[in-house]
Length: 394
Image (cartoon, rainbow, N blue to C red; front, top):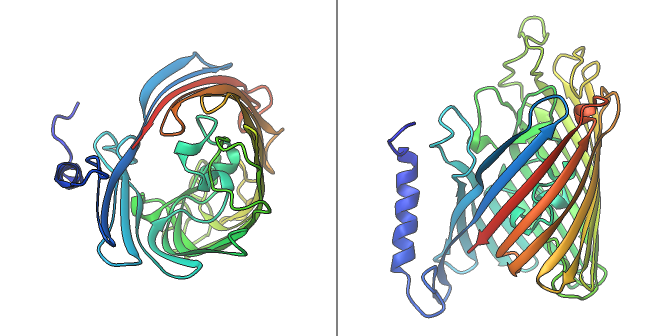
């Protein structure tokens, strides 16, 4: 076990400590400062998770860990401008993952044009309602296939992001032009951000956008129904990503053939989404379908999700909950399906559980029991999982 603290942690932790003790004012309560248009916010989320997994083909195992440990700092010194950076010390990539920091949000934003907001930096790409919905507002402990960046949904990406609204906020839209990376893997379609890149990531340009219609007034990206009023939304989205061929580490440059049997360089990806949500009288339902068409650089490889260099990956999910005790206890359930060209059969997951809210999503305890059938499209490859998570948001 290493005793030295990674130097990357020193500055952000010192900055967080200074801000926490230096702010003033009764409304700050030790975590924020405001003086006219100038302000500083310091916050974060802590998600302590216990995970038990029992596969049919191996021994059961469990672990206790910080699923997310994400402080953030947000502030402004000029009207209509703000900056935010957020990092995760609960889960980071690399050889020294126990000491590294994974950058999440890192952007500057201009909000001085009526109905339009401009964001420059590393921020969420406007695809998949479930992914855009923050992890702190999810009903199930873990996202389903439709919101998982391992299976086609873009992660936070580095570039220009626009969003806005019209018709009294009954219509919302977003669009992005970004640099986006793919972590090549025959079993996944794994988008990652360039700011936390590994040496073997495929690099490329991605463009995309979404439109959401809210017939009964704007419905935020948040699951669960605390307000007991009728809300609904339907959304569509699409994107296109193309490899710039600067970093194809698993393809022979002379022959164009794959040099690995487990990692295939990806040439291009297109994705589409249709999603919807409903809230009323404690009932909350979210449904989403997304599909992806991906081609590998070597057009002849077969394995995992790919067949003859092509993967048509389809994800379906529906999840919902009902407040048995208003504002306090919610029962939840979900069903998700994934299919791919090279799968023997569909990969299915069924989830049931409950959420106990101490202070809505700010402080809650979640329990999810997930039954997985035919994992990775292999018939009879099953496993059951239990997720127990305590969340504190400030």
